[in-house]
Length: 163
Image (cartoon, rainbow, N blue to C red; front, side, top):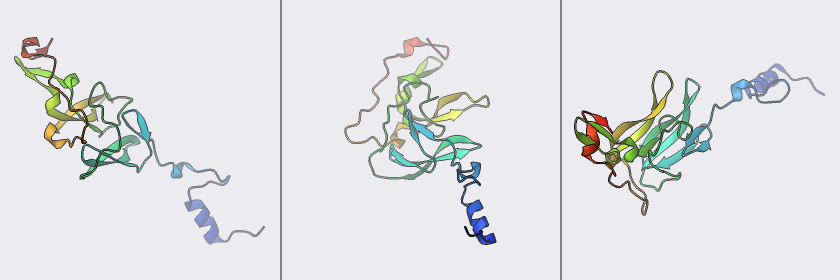
């Protein structure tokens, strides 16, 4: 067996493989991103609601980065923001709002279906949906169901609290 020259050692070391030929920690692309419960590898691109999203990491946390607007059908399911995104959507994912997002301002009901929501986290790491723009910013696929009006009414609002 021929000995590796200095250049060969550098090439092997920079390839992401350790001495045993197994991938080293430097070759680890990072954690997968979640979209509607499905895993997507780092660097994966999906289309949802008329935008391209790329799976990235920020501080070792998987995150979707929203990119260009496109006129193409979604490549992933979009169930809407029907419950807490934790364990189903990584940070940065967006979904059309639903009655899950309804809230009150005084005695006025604000319907969740009027907005697009993004998965965000607070300082403690709690993941939740936060309004990211009007529902007009979401391009629904042809034939895809759109959120309907809320089953709630303003009569359930008591001084800003949804009862």
